Image 1 (cartoon, rainbow, N blue to C red):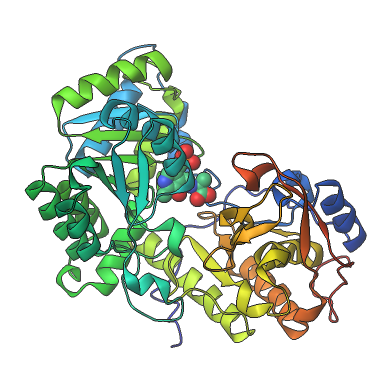
Image 2: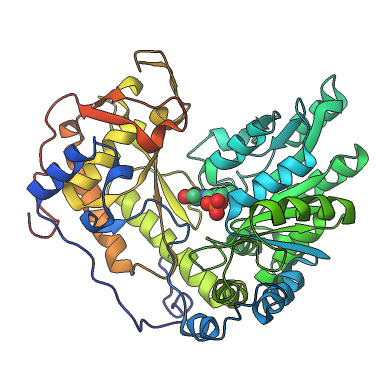
Length: 475
Ligand code: F0G
């Protein structure tokens, strides 16, 4: 469907710009070799378009920077804290708000205060740090994504939902008493940026109340989920994104939020709570490990940027423009012959590398191979979400359990790249799609025991060759 630019115009113009490095093909080849063929080891000044993460990578607004200049750095009770508290308290409706420096600090504090060893934390899908923090307190993370999520090609609107039938049978079954928390991730970052419907969030709330289980949101992308609900769920068509987000928070007992995404800031997060006792336990932990309860590891200027950021992020014009830009990007990539998880979400595109590179078996890591090729051909950095990240390896680092899908995530920083930058990425992908067999597979050379994808080193199985048609600058 053609997009009407009158409805998708970004509601801002660019005032401050930053040059992006443009390397030649041989410089990129050398850089990747020196990085052990792991894009995490690249230096940012070796990257032309960085789609590794949408976290902490957004552009701030003039209003945010003006507010930051007013940051009050008093140790306790700073003005900036009260501004943050007013905004976040109003947005969520929770009586207790604890600031943290980023999402995973909030997860650690919440889980340490709420979960006991042996308990189960159930989610539509845990993000990787969330998964790790559940395990660190001796509890078991369990993912129950809805069955529709397994079909990457279907256009079902809410593939981020939890499987309600599976959740109910867990709660009523022999392990029911072990469930210590239900945590809904909105949007579902682990599963293709798919949104969760309000009907699903509501039904989870009813089940949790009936079984007396605490119910929390991992709401890193609360505004983007709200936008997609407004577009796709009939009952919410006339609600503003802010009203929808507020209602989602109200359905739960609390939340843990990384504000590095929809806080439109480089750093920040918070825990929102209804329960006073739990708040007291979390607060003691916060003071011991993050900072006093009126700053939680953040500077006054950070709190100011965040207070303004959570206000800007629910602007329908901003969300509509961002969603349209991702949808347009998805369309270009699909037209180039590269399949993506359908329907397009907002914060990232998920490329189906398994399908694009059928000549590579999972143990040759097709997702990683595509990511490396994007760097070699165009200086583009992204993240693999396939067997390198999720698969099971033996002691010789050989793949024994492949991941269900071989995906690559192209995360889109907020307000940073124009549609022209995304067209460049689509053009590089189009070149790869014209001759996919030139993409080499990879083998692991060394791998750390924990959090493999960050530090693993690899080597290509054959020398990767350049594109047949050059699109990148300075070949
Ligand atoms: N929850 C979700 C759903 C996330 O996507 C992230 C981070 C976190 C929690 C942790 O928050 O980084 O502030 O500690 N996601 C980033 C990403 C890193 O690239 O998707 P954090």
